[in-house]
Length: 626
Image (cartoon, rainbow, N blue to C red; front, side, top):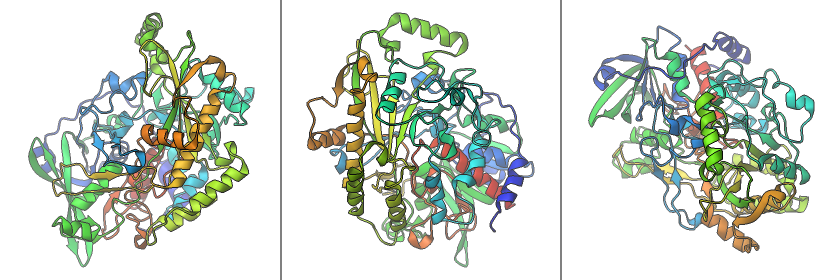
């Protein structure tokens, strides 16, 4: 497929106008047998954040037959998913979550880390923490160094950030530290969407510690950033959330399903787990002709005349590649799988954001989301508001964040010390790591690319907690960890989860980055006016003051933000890349991967907006190549 120019992309993009889409729609009803008997042009594995975007867009062409295979089911009205204040409750519930678990992690005190992944129509967009934000422009521009030819840059993705969303205009950003003009003006035209399927909005209520926290950031020299969508994300931000503020409910990828469900050329099979891509080989090139899957305990095969697209996520897309004979040939042979394409990069390059928290007990009378559980009067008021019109604290969730380059909160000598630590990390030759290291070294010295994210969580999260007290937690996380993990199969049983090893905190750079984040958040809690609301620091215990003590705490208490990515990365094949600039798997003619697996270097943002943009862009690449 030839290179598509920017002008051509814009022409293809401009031809698609978003339509009004109902929030709920008919449950998928096609049977596995009928699905297997249907002749498809495109088969998509995974009805989640990426897969439903592609399926819905491709179904706009009535001449194409589109099929989606999804292991979970549709939950059209489900408070655990829909209600913003219930965020996190569904994680770990097998009704909604795959419940993956990592191998024991040496760097986090031997713990196994839960790896929440959405097992439902809508995928992880129905399970995540709602954050809707994008990274700094140099982070996306870096992708083009790994796979040029399709403008994998911030500007190349910008039309697709916009295409995915409708931003609630007219809302006032109430965060301190921005001017009246910045507070009341709508977002800059050309930076956010106004006709997409995913609704994004500010909170309309904020817990008591939020504005004092922002002022404390400002007092420490961290400015409030009124417009992080422009590619400059550094500072304190009021992150939008994927919430339809008119109804007070989560807005997620099922909107794409509802957009197309009435089309006769759009079929979604739920409750079916893909087990293998069927490949036909000729002269060293492998063509995907179908997908095997299990539904109700029976194995089926569906066929595709044009393409098979894996959108099963950064855990299961590499699993399916390996089960299909694509991956490291040594690993495949050890499992008696015939290697069809030797791609050692499959399942490598796993990256994730790791966070550690500082938790405070707040003074009596301070309102946080804990008040929904320990203040009966407040709780009754808020439930009545939500039941009446979808407003109030049940429609709100964490939006106060900061994105911090090292130079924003460390002095120059500390930044140089971190740079020296980074220079000492191991770099594996023959992989993507040499280029990644070169790029990240520049970012460490930059005042544009953040390395730490903080999240102001409006409740208690870390033990010990008392049911009658009210808490506020600040989390700090590594946005560009050097840890590189793996996802690999260790059996030919497709229903067995792959082996997940993130290698969290396996190097001094990541450890020191988290240490600086925790120390900064401890300082934040002692800075007025936030300090005026704090009764005491609970976690880590305030008597832990040395680096050694705080590092031990971080290893024992850190947690994932559930952003696995990079396991089928864009990049040169010789350097461990798995897909080319068109997202086609090397050694195949028509097998693509479209999900967070393809991200070569994890970006400093919550990932869902980025995955939507990747998917919208992938559709444009496919469409303009037809």
